[in-house]
Image 1: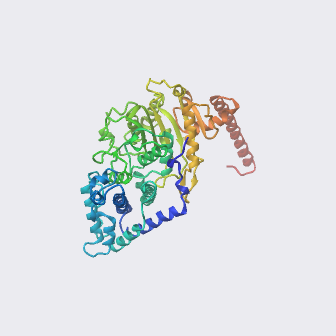
Image 2 (image 1 turned 60 degrees about the vertical axis):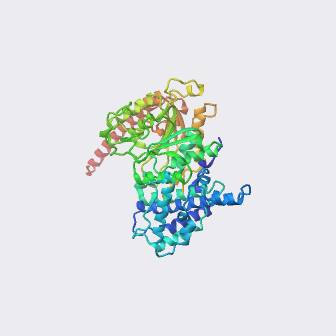
Image 3 (image 1 turned 90 degrees about the vertical axis):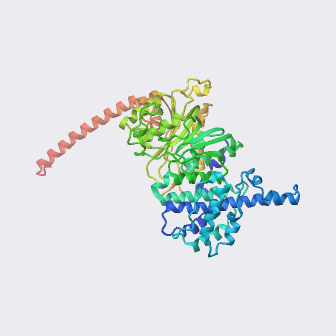
Length: 531
């Protein structure tokens, strides 16, 4: 399978790239002062946004002015024609919002640089309806040091967003670096909008969303969509072969997603507002070809009392104290008949029997919806230490219309991959999946799905188990239960028989141990040291 940008390891970026990102972060971080990271995030990312769209506008302006096939008088006219920019997916930037104007007035006293930036953001929103209500407009606030803001403007001026992909590659690196740094600074709250890049790449590599509708009902800052677009382009597809649908309940994160997608020229329907997917589903009729998501882990405050009778719970009403299986069933509800879903969940969802979760999981398994489970290594997330796994679901095996012979071979089977031993330490506390790790996991899944003779169980890594195997283990989906068994079953002894033999041996050894304990106590008592 061809590999594209979705396979690259951020842990292996060149020192030059790291220096650009780290230098910008170091400079921008000086602005924070006493501001909370969650609030300051929008100040820094807003400046990156403004710089990029201004650079893109200037690049398009230069193309028009230097076009030898256009008469000089017409060039000047076209250079001020909004349609000449929007037709190329370039935002129209009013003169007082252009970076050169802001840089030239960065040291002016009246109005302050912050006021100039606020005015620039307001002008951009007025001229570009898709940005309405999205941009940060409080750079003139008293707690934001205006002298330092002017210094950052000058430093950012040295960064040119220009490369083979209209500056998007450099923009993407800088933007994702900042998002990651803010996620670290915010701790647990950072997980609301940021998913580790290597985890997103693995999900996308496994699902391969070449064409169709992609949906994320808890989209955070839109990272899943960005990787999907990159994957399509890397495989010579067309960006518009993918339709993006998303939803986000946090208003500031929703704005962040809108900005993140806008600067990449990705058209997406994130709804007309921010809203909770459980309480107010903004895409009620959507049946997606692909669902990609990283929902909040073990959320206990998900508004269950307001949606108890929802049609989305055919496999059982989710418990009020944990939203995991509410999310799982929400994903299934929005899957097209041939659709695939890939998402991150806390490991507890693989084995929990509390509050009916085990029964919901059993019904989902028996409905032939679970395609693959992947155990991930620890320390991949800077925002949580909770162990997590990837779930892959499909309606293909359960819709009763299976015609493909390869797919028929997968009915009644689930692939388990134990990837806990993969990954490399990027920092003292953070691990990443390398390109090789991602390829190993994705290739195993695709080899199994394609049934072309390439797949084989690998002791300690992957095992294709039947639904009967899963039922025998109480419908627990922990990969280690199956992958370890695969290694043990090489001697031909069935798992159930081996467990009966081993537990009988253990019982005998425990009885012998008890007898020895009694003898030792008796001998000590005879010596006058009773216990």
